[in-house]
Image 1 (spheres, rainbow, N blue to C red):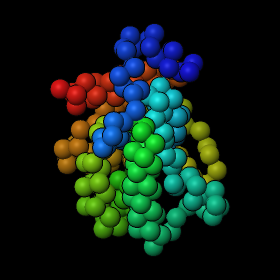
Image 2 (tube, rainbow, N blue to C red):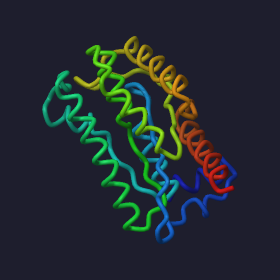
Image 3 (tube, helix red, strand yellow):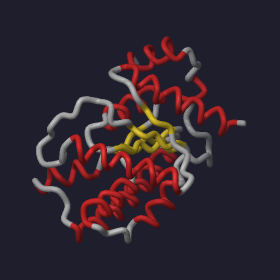
Length: 206
């Protein structure tokens, strides 16, 4: 509960309505975190889930890399994206079943599709991934303003991070997918994310 207390003081917002569980038959709201490597998505996902009283779905790519001790090959990208979509659906169903109002996603199929396009020249996954991204209540784009840190085989370097961020911004903008850039260090980064979700919640509630 410490994270919620900090958010209440610094944002000055009453999060009680937002922390309320989903009503019977109500679809939980989904917050999608996207961003390049080493942009703090996992910390934001955990912090938002704590602040909102929701659940969060860990990044599938990290799980894959730990399990296989390597990054996915070109021919594995489609299967990885399909699994992400299936896990999204299962987590959403779980949230609805348990009466949880918020589901926080640590990365989305769009990130997988864009990496497939950038690294392997395969754009075949993009159309489905873009359509899927439109289903989320809020898309938060983690900015590459944190110090870059090596993390074994999963991270490629600050130049790749900057290149992918630019591609992600261009794709979201081109396809009219509303998103909010999240910047800042430490607690300020979480506060920015909570403010963005509060704003989206208010607009959706009108």
